[in-house]
Length: 184
Image: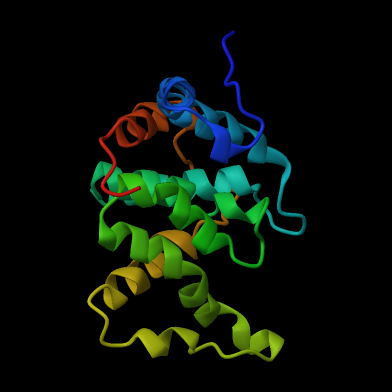
């Protein structure tokens, strides 16, 4: 394989960067496949819960799909907690960053803020502020985020819920990550 000639970026030539751009475009095209593979590995996470992180994600996405959410939101529901593995203290922002180039401002905001909105259900049990989300009251996506949490996320820890399989969501993930990016 052809490689760049530089060992410091500042010494790279136009040809070096054109070569890297070619490789990067191909790599970006594989994003959906890498995400699907990553999701498949979430089956052994979340000690203490009755379902795995994968099952929680599948339930959340299945509920969104059954409520006739658009494909973008269904995929966002599927991926909303992918940050738990590597960024447990800011998992929402991590998931939102992965989605940002491919989803609307609204979907990005909902995923980015859902962690704070979820605190409504548990923070008071741990000495925290269950009304953390109130600082966003009046924001144009406030109610959409409340609805995301209430209708899909917080109720998706049920070992008896019949969710769709990851395989059934794959075409949607591919569709979203094959889009021309909104932003970079």
